Image (cartoon, rainbow, N blue to C red; front, top):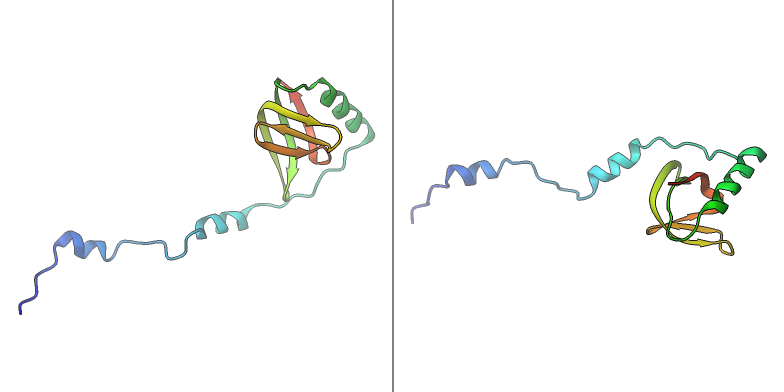
Length: 107
């Protein structure tokens, strides 16, 4: 029985790169992340933050800088919840502990 010749396209496809390990790119990017220490607020910074937090209300637009897993992130959007008992600020779907907030700004 004679063997059929493989088309040029199929032959070329054999040598195309593929991802042998899914998630490898993301893991490498995570390794490149620079870990920073959490900033401890001074008394003046804490008082200013407390004043800004009291200006927030459910439904307003806010921007919050907070500490999470060794880096500072910013969440901007509508305030969905402010829970003083649980000490959680929720902006859209992002839940932020009061202790992790560095700065907040009502838009």
